Image (cartoon, rainbow, N blue to C red; front, top):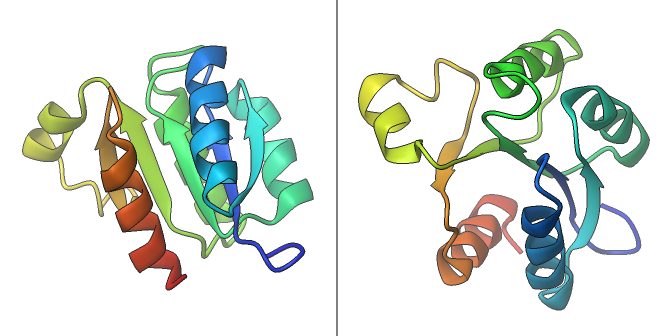
Length: 125
């Protein structure tokens, strides 16, 4: 938490997605940190100490999101991680997202009400 606000780290290579999430999240009382790559995301993670992460599944490499989650595990991350994916439903059906170290999967295009409801419940805002 920073300045009494939960910090959400958004990592996605699509600047439009990052912008849209920033507008929604900041408009609802969250502080947003962001990055466009897994490498930059790691730096942002260390700098922002986020309360929750929203991470694109496929960024600069097909498995960049999954590799990033594994790296966070090594660092001892305790913040919930939600994967953002256009293949979210397929991922949930074909893999146990909890085994990947995820709290859940958000399907693109993202429904803002669903996002805010889940974040409020997870962060007990």
